[in-house]
Length: 639
Image: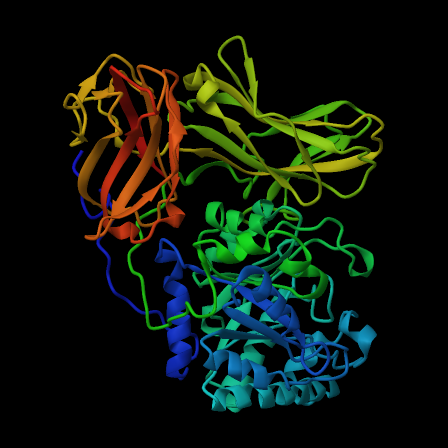
């Protein structure tokens, strides 16, 4: 295999810029918008961290931001303030801090829990406005009061514009939910109100420092239904308070709108009174962004009991190589032309149009394609089940060849109603061959927040003759009543890209400090029939099998290789060297012997992935070794 500066089929990088919605946007605002667009092209430093600091004039403070820095060593890259909170006031005294934050190299975002124009008190904030369609009519009392509120907001945004501070402006958020006076309105009317608000603040008030952020609630449907259009929006995002970030719904639906994507609010799920049900491991958020939501340009954690430092995992969130903190924001820097991702799920069923041939067994009713919940897109598969019954199935019985894939995944959940006792579990399964042999991924406890199920196909026989794919739902002892179960986003995962398989030669690999030159051998193989083999002196301190050539691994997450030795003793390290300075990165020493070991290197910790100069395995002896022994390397892959 010949190494090049990229992978076959990946077009060459092309410099380009992306424009904000406002043609008159300031140069600084244009730079921020363009920089956010390009962040997903990077191998690291690609997701801006954010922290909400409170409601202006009431709770706004840097105390919890300082706490985050004290605990993790880093300031977030993005600072958030809300101009309204208690239902009857609008305040922007937080601007002084926002200006200082911007001057220190950070980004700022402003949201606004604005008063209900017809009921400007605390209760009004949470009371649906029945005259919502009058907001655009300045001849009505509702419209006049609304535009008076916008005038007050514009005063604060003008102060930031005069200081040349670009603002990620997020009004009327979570409009698809049921929390606020602007929530659950007619989607078409909402879009008209958004466009009118955009025109008023941009054209009438002359504010050209705004990047408009559209942010529905990930826990409700119709996430894109309220979208006013690309001419009135700069960033699309989701507000998400969940137990399991990897199960968040709506990402693909929002990314498909063609704007930079963000998690505009994140935090743990809370119950009545705002109490946290289960502390959130914020490290799971960066894991989920890496694995499932790689187009994310920024996230903003909420404050108080929802903040990272009041939960767990703050350090892992803030110090991950993907995370951008204040001091690392350089809006003039662009990264172009990332290669296509490896291992992208191949959809098998998304239920967007109908049930796609899926049926139910031991269900009370259904299944149906519904819009009330979806992991991706706008629909999922739903059925009603009896929790007193031991089990129920949603499945598709039809022949399928899955021999080209390594795993299956599906996202599932239950409804909130019904007595689930100790908890309902789900298994993703397949049946193969004429005997309908059963294979499953193991039971996973599920609930209203959803969970991602996975089935490793490596141990499944007859993959060319899969007869059934499905999900088994099992009730806990003592469960009772009726509930609903959902399945969405059933996908097959392709295997990683093989860098070297050694089936037809050494693939350019050589040996250093080995007793014999490496050769393609049939003596052992982890995949196929051949591997790379060489003899080493067990008394020598180290030996290497490696390939020296330029390789671009931008956008790749993991490098892997399977190794073994003819005798026990010693260790092996998978490593890369990057740039002309040959900077070394390795995955750590792993004990080596006759049993195969798969070595993995997390590429997120590797700098200059676009300029990898060497991939190899270092073999080190243990004290007391003597004689010679063969060593083997096989199936070097990236994903």
